[in-house]
Length: 197
Image (cartoon, rainbow, N blue to C red):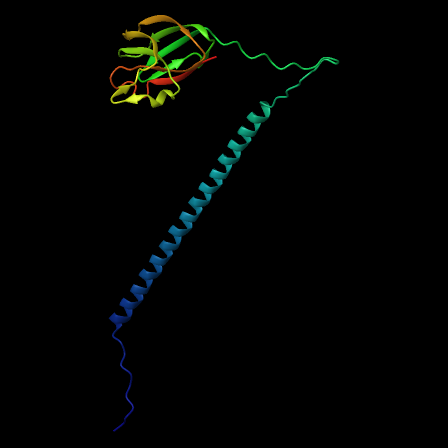
């Protein structure tokens, strides 16, 4: 009796199955490698295009800026002292635009004395124009639901959409608030500061 035994051999079917399984795994790995290479190639093309576009934009901006360069030259006559520019004269007539919910003057300052406000409602609802002499900023007049009109020196009354009205007032130097005090309008921001000098 011999103690050495022959190793058992695998049946042919098991070897074929293992080999087929290995071939499938190899094909799967090759397919994954192909996809990764394709993704890397696509990203490379995208990166190159992004760089080309960026460079093109940079060149276009640089060219445009270079074309807009300017030189300022100041010439002073010999022997004459340079005089400072005269300040612009303050207006005595100011245009006022009313809209939802803003007051837009053509100037935020006027000359002391008779000041004419040419007011036009360019909005789509009724507004009014009130001039108040005050030391407070125009935004600090709220008293309850409306602005405090203490210091009122004149107003237009209600102006329908598209309507215009001029009012002339004698205004001493000082700070004024220009407001619309119809319900909710002042609180919505329809006010601005105005200075008389």
